[in-house]
Length: 547
Image (cartoon, rainbow, N blue to C red):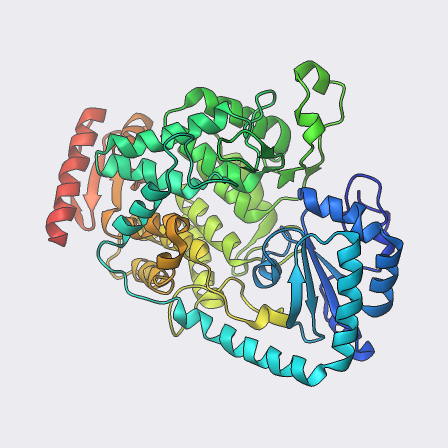
């Protein structure tokens, strides 16, 4: 529920969490902590988060806990979706995050969900410790900051030959042959791993990789992790066999799942999933998508007839730029209407020379810029794409090591001054820049070099990420393999995409198709079969140039 006069979202069920005098993340909150000598209690929650709601209803509704927090702490509440940069630095392993901070924003200790008795005990112990051990706390905080300062440099590395193969092997080794997916329980969709399998199955002519992806999607859509009444995927399964889900539905997950269903040729499941997205999450006027729909175990146990009279779980109608741009790309890849979403998104959140905001009233993050850049390239909004690429370099680039930092600075409160270079967003930046470079076609353009440097800046991370580095492998493999196909013929463009997952379509041509590798272009062709043959020849040219 959103209490009157409050900017905070609490559990939709009865609770007293609003009786805690929550502050937003702000200079004023940190100043108050410094002035009063109290530690900060940072609660990171999310609108969709089941255990965040439980904590509101239990620990944050307990009279003794409320009193302890209001008397001995400066309580700060942050929404994960609204401030991913704060979550990136303070998350304690899940949501809710319960972090205890110094007045300078350094971490004392933390946990996730704490039941009332544990919470009360922790509050009393931490308040006492904070009052009596300031010298020790300051020393530990300084050491932690030194370790964090070295983090960005440790992530850099060489783009070694065979790195894509290593990551693909990690995906294959984690694959669950019985139930699909990767690993045991809990089991998440791992959409980039699915997309890597499908893309590589085409490039390597390996049907087994496609079978892994299809089997996973069939198990997911056939099991409890899929809503068989209204459509759409739940966030993850608590069991290995996809049977018992966590019931929230996330826009963030659906972008990759829509792409995977489309690439895997699963049209029936794609249609039902898109039906849910268009009916429930998509605003019919603007075409923009809401961020999430709440978990509600009871509601999702009802059949279609029973749901007609039941109140549907809450939908967070906030529009998040990165997720909407990603969804628009997924829709376009699936042959659906993503243009209307982008028209509204760019009209509302883009300003030339300043880039994209993250959501209404909240400054942009790296993810917002790179996904919007990719969407602008895909939709041939070239002036906007060039502007976003320029802004990315000016505001987010690491001048020394290459690559991009997760936010542009400005808010340096607490640990926000720490430099973090995320693997996923740098990989997406590389994919967007490679496609931009391919479309521009100018050997002097800097975009491919920037893409390479972005990947080099995080190249040491995949060895510890395993299958979670699939997005990096998808980006790295595009560096040598991107092709440009110039045609305005939709059938030929579709044939090109089916034949090569990295095909970049330039719509400035005529009804024939011209396949180009760098500055070398093959003769125009006029049929889908001829397009596929031209792509084969162009791929051989790439292999010869790399040999």
